[in-house]
Image (cartoon, rainbow, N blue to C red):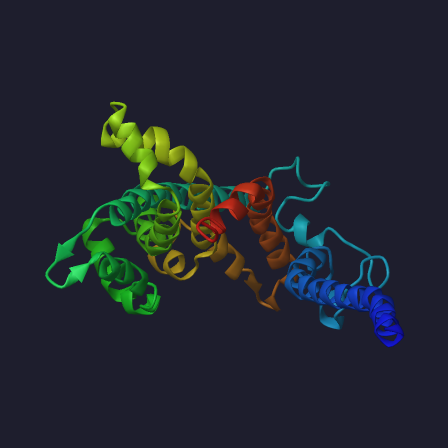
Amino acid sequence: MSVQTTEYAASEIRSPASFFANRAFIYGALVFWAFICLFPIYWTITTSFKTAVDVTQGHLIPFVDFRPDWKGWRSLGLSPDSIFRTSTVRDEFIKRFMNSVITSVGASSLAIVIGSLAAYGLTRYRYHFAWFKNEDISFFFLSQLILPPVVLALPFLVLYREVGMLDTRIGLILLYTLMVLPIVIWIMRDQFNSIPVELEEAALVDGLSIWGAFFRIVMPIALPGMVAAFILAMVLCWNEYFFAALLTSTDAKTIPVMVASQTGSQGINWWSMAALATAAITPLAVIGIALERYLIMGMTAGAVK
């Protein structure tokens, strides 16, 4: 009896130490992973305040390794001493920024509308086209992500030239909608699957139409998933470079194309490119932080039933 009591007491003594050791390991791993994920953003922001010498020598810590300078932001007309002056580069940046906003928001909104309706139909009705059933249709949408974008380059280039949509915002919006539609459909399909059908049946019994039940019952519940799908679609559209560089020339160029064009006779202007990249990722960071609650709710919908 005394031996068992001694062993139990020893286990009680060891358990707090083991608990704190496990906690320390878990949090240490999370901090290390967060450092790896956030370091590129830190490097980009600090590079926008470096001079050429600081960039080439790899200085990392402001006020320790180098003295911050507004050179990168001054080249864009966005530094404190140039923000109120006339700047053609700043006007160009604002134009490209607005092109990215219009194309990303337009394509994401259109994809949410079309994708939500398609996903709702796949979860509430049974389809049978030849050997195609609901599961096959869903997989067909997802399989479109496997196709490399370069395969579609020539067909879209010829098509857009024939219909007069080269270098237009509407052309990018339609193309980006097709690009993110499969992801939206899969996210919203899982979202609608987590909503009990009995809620809609009760609404129909109370006199609502199918559309009424969808807009008044289903959509409010599925709103977090829609927000999550919208954010993900917007991020993909905002960062898209290949088609933006291929199908635009002057009027509809976006921020990624402008970032990639920061080269001069002496090579890449890292400070200007970093300042542009910092200005480009800031809106997405703000949106992600502001809508974090909806993003987490939407991404975890259907995980627990």
